Image 1 (cartoon, rainbow, N blue to C red):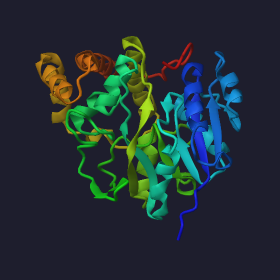
Image 2 (cartoon, rainbow, N blue to C red):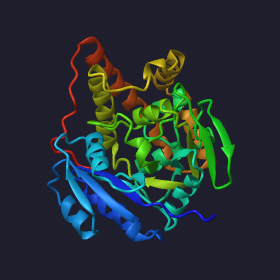
Image 3 (cartoon, rainbow, N blue to C red):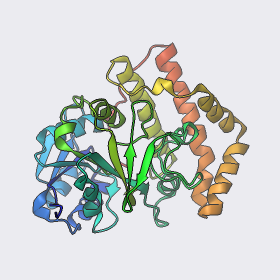
Image 4 (cartoon, one colour):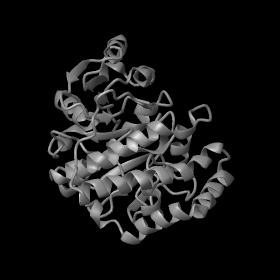
Length: 342
């Protein structure tokens, strides 16, 4: 029986993202997927840089105002406005790198047990900025995830897409993955597609935290996802300052929302020994250099040299953020005033 192409709602949060949004939307409009089966819903946090002009130019179906401004809140309001069968979380800094990307990504939904699909890797392009290349090679945007083994894209040091003990069945075009509540790779963003109806039963309002809603899906009995054997471009950061800014946002928001009991995935269960390994490796530097050399031996690129700085920035920013939040009790949502993508 032929598989009918489902309708897709692209969910894109924005806040002063004009520089990358045009590339993102162009890649969506270049898909060989029937455009009348795609709607694009933007949750905008009050952009003032031409983002909305870009959205209009590419025929975005709906722009929904996001008064809470954060990307997580922008996704939530966009989901509320979405109407189609599949929700596709494609951020403004994501590029679909091939015209059959959407067709490949919806293929696994022919299996009724599969609730979601996600690309297996970040697309590596030698023409991208250094930090974007580094993140693509690492298969993650946060080097701490490498040390705790909780990542979800192919890492070119380990050669694996995750180190968590998940059940995997190779289906040719994709991996059929069975998840459990204790072992969830950092899935849920940057090209994550999910069936709309079960997703609407998760606790995605007012802030849609990626791994938390996947946690909700699993608890509701939806344990099978697909890791499709393609990539997606993630234009993560243009320079070290942008990288540090995003790390500050990550830890600051996590502590703030955890204290408000809005976070659910048990990050506290991460083995302390792995966290100690990260801190010790970063302080000694030499283990980081060995990792960078191993990565460079597999894919030669000077972007690997950023590994030491990335780990040091992460250790210092996370360490200060935890001390400020857990010891001093000072937790606030990171201010988005003046925020710009990239």
